[in-house]
Length: 454
Image (cartoon, rainbow, N blue to C red; front, top):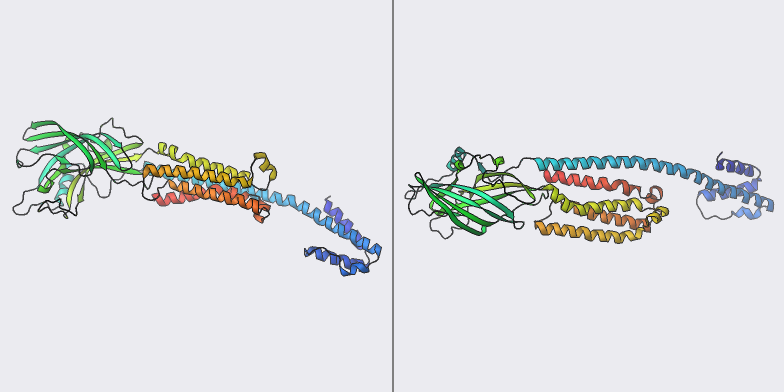
């Protein structure tokens, strides 16, 4: 039998033995207790006889004991209810977190394994018919008195590629051209790489083949190109070598020497050395293309129409980043700190025994969060120094989420110290922070990933 039942029976017997005047005073005391007012004796208490006063005091004590017994009996029920709620919420939290993690990995795999796509400005050419069709789309017919258009077959073989910075690429290899014997004798022979910051070239062979002359050069050039790192580390880049003829002002155009290659399928990497190594990148395709460009200056050449679109030959290399090395070098710091923050959230709370067991004080968590903040800041600055990207890149979302988690955990610790009697903490300890931690982070990551790669 519960203790409250025994006390209630004893209280009922005590109240039944009270005189009408004493019972009225007891009811006033009972009413005052229910209203949570300051305990004080009713005015009628002084008019009672000593035996009546004793009976009222004993009944009041029994009433107080009954309230304490009922509260003690209700506490396990409340604790059991909170325990059931905690178990259910942990299951829901784990399922949501796991689903978000699977979805996040699925999006990454889909994006990383998707086939590469050329730049929208590129007109990819793999056959002579495609070259002819593209050039015919432009009005290359000369004006009366001008020279007819000249097309110089040009080939390229890349021996090495190396990133010298986020936007600088060192390229070495060979370029050759074939000049028909019936071309104007005053036509210069050579090429220009207009985007090269530095170039060194030398003629390595020259031969007469039938009714045309073949000239080959070796070259080394540092190209300055604009790359978009917004999707880092799932970004894809396209390295290009733009080619002009030396006499570009004379209506001379370059055409890819397609006959020089055993295969022109982009996936077979035509024009690339089979032993070419590009650290931290995977080479996907190589191909020739045309782009139509115009300029806002005539280069000082009288009669050159700079604002007219001119078809220019490009050799392109499609690459994608080595995902594993990027994730290992850039994900470790934020992931480890997020895990450590979660451990802190699990440990801190109103349970003093648990805090003493782990040697944790909620107030000291603030200093730990400050150390975490500077660690994440250092990692983010290192990433930005490497990429020198304009604006944020995709992976920085994880750093921003880590900053948010650090701030939230610090605020949670402050509230546990300053307001430990809040209903949120009094009834549920730190349960809500625990079960919402990973779902909030992973759901945000999935949403931003979807918006980035949709």
